[in-house]
Length: 477
View 1 (cartoon, rainbow, N blue to C red):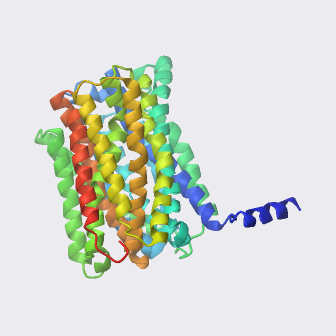
View 2: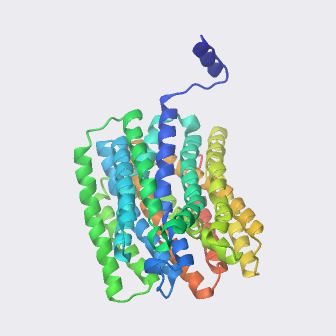
View 3: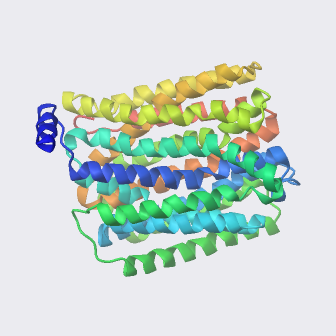
């Protein structure tokens, strides 16, 4: 009787739990823990710099090196985007999500076991490669199971898991490291967060396997696993060869990132040469290409704040790493509210039948103005921790909203049968921003002695993104 009353109440309120809500829940959790795994690098590296730990202690430009380490993760992450989307369209999106999440738990554990710079970089690259199989298949599965009227909300709700993971990694990691260091010393404790967070990631992979249904089915796990591992092995060898080459040539950190970026450029060229005709609806559509390129500043912004917010607040306000974590964490907290908000904004714009690009252009322009305001405040010597926290929060809400709008607009523009490839290309191109952001921002910080110049560059890139999306031309867009 009680169950019937609850069901009647749900119907009266217009809500009943559907399987797509179950998909939302597990994809939210997968995003949360995968993002913790990838976001650990920023606070761990910041903590290492602050405590003169291990292989960062003697680096002449530690901020640039720290950014390069995170850039290596995104080098791996971006290279598997399109191939994994292709595998997901062929073998099943759920299959690839389970494999990506399970392998991410293993490679995060391996990161915690690394004891040299090269081993640490290789483990981060490998983590990026396996996590690169997630995004394109997550977006495709979510789009295929969710009714169109709430598709924007779905994108936002799931991506709120990203924000929660980023917040947990930013706020909790320095506290954990301080506690561990008081017991075992700084040199013996930095790796423990990687080992600890690998466990729940594995449990989430098991939950997705058990509770999520893919309407397009799947063809087993062994064959896509073998193909994914083969792809990862090739790209790992290519990235580490480029990394070793740059070390032998004694190139700077920015030059090293440029070499890795060139590897990604070669991959994009190969995709267009060999799949240009077969996947022309995804690769040669003008609107989609504009969406891919305009996503670069989105990921650049995400990882400027996701990687460097902790040190930005710590150094600007003369706070310790743990003290700055609360204020830097405001970005992730703001994202939790912003991602679903962006979904609601887009769904309402779709329902009204107006120009669907307008919400992104307005939101992106607002974020650009706020980031430039942050840069001006830092340039003028602003150092108040509360002001920095408020600005970071104010940036985080519309930023997350604009990212949701951008992804949902891309989903509306892409062919349903090639959704995995479309989002794979979206993230492959967008991750150029994530690859460059940590190292370029860190290098600018080392060269200028402050965070104003990195913020101004970030704001300028966002204005370019708004202009590109404004150029999308299609009915109701």
